[in-house]
Image (cartoon, rainbow, N blue to C red; front, side, top):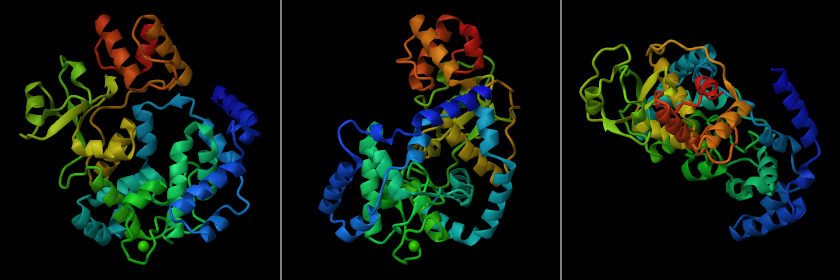
Length: 394
Ligand code: CA
């Protein structure tokens, strides 16, 4: 904890005065002039641009948020218990009841059930309790000016200006430091592509209009591959002699084929007969819970690429429909710091298992190198980058 606080202090100090260094070649004013030209080309009015850029300065807080990455990567149980909290369960049940009719109508139209919409809503903004309070134009202009991901955020800024110009979003709109807005935290390009003005008042009000919020989230999910009347996945039980290499999102088999390999329901009962395609996910390695991931799980991953996020949305939605807690009991295990993961990556690289350039974040390449290391050492090949691996490598 002390290390964490020191890191925060350090980053605060280092970044207190660094907006001058965001770009090598141009000033913020030059950046805005360039954006203005591009915006006028897109047909955005001069009046909107004058108002939007009036006295606009980069926001140092945004840069600070962007550069202060969490020092620890939460493991599955910690992530799940903080995301699927008692508060979210209680509040989510209230929201389901309160908005029953609108959510059902929304379901009929888009095929995304109420408990899924409410789970995203809870995950993204605590049901509207935390939608962000930074001016969106200023945040996106800051990040667009910053050379690190200039192209992505410049596109978001132009999209936002266009939405404002069309009167769909107010010029004073606020959001997260990264430019996500409203109850379901859409980026501007998502609002433009998937936002729905469900009550036909000309605005896509993701802050205060429930119909717009539910329809936009459901429309987005439908467009990115949500299938009506299918679950996202479920907890399962895998046999002791399971080939853990099969637990990989790139491997899909029918439920029937998994049954032949000994996979059972989480309560150890037989799974129903089904031709549905599933992958197996082990978010905490062979010692933790196992899940079937159906194709709706992949839709959740298109909303947010984190597997832990997708499992948490799925589990929160299950709990809201009365499905029990997970059968697997939580394992208490220290979370790994970025330094720990960096050490793992460096050690694996030295042993000849290529993780790429060590960055303290365990992505697909690190997991694949871990599997190779496990294979050559006769360990369970689950690819899990956790505390046990750290100890083995030490
Ligand atoms: Ca509306």
